[in-house]
Image (cartoon, rainbow, N blue to C red; front, top):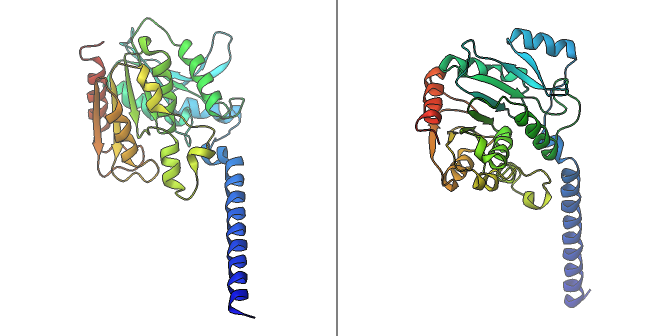
Length: 280
């Protein structure tokens, strides 16, 4: 074989290898794209009897809408009338009953009623989780809250995207927001976790918090964790820095994902005080 023929053969081989590599990469992207929601949502499913027991153990009661349909759990303040209402939207690996610790900590710090949204497909709530379904459920829950007191939002991890959506949608009805280990958009931590995939092109559910918060001008608190490997603190900082309204940042250098280090009551007293000082 002549040198020219060898060169042509090598070029053909290189093209075939490139084509094979591109095909394999495209197939990987297609498989991950088709199954992306299983990577985003991690619903824990229980029987109604199990959920009832979990609720009793956590001192929570079922929360229903005007039609009597289950939408979450609540715990009213022992002191009535309460000084406000808090709606909690949790992270993707938790549940409404598993978020009872927020009610514990908040109500140790202030006389606030706490409501926790349950996501479709989690615990014993019917449906399945998608961005659209979570936003629909959150809107319904927000509209089911009592309106005689200030309303505050607490969003944790993925739930920070839900809370940001509510803040942007009901901007004039919300007195304060706290976002725990948030992101500017879900595409940011996704790209961090899967650096070799075109996440911005593949993702269907994006939770673009930074966009929703452009419509909100009230108080926003943000927590970031120095040892967070799930949603690295840079994404929470980016969201915080881009927000132009009144804001406060809590930094936990030794904290992991959604980990508030130090006395919980001190943190929540500070956060609630930030909400309630010179209310908008």
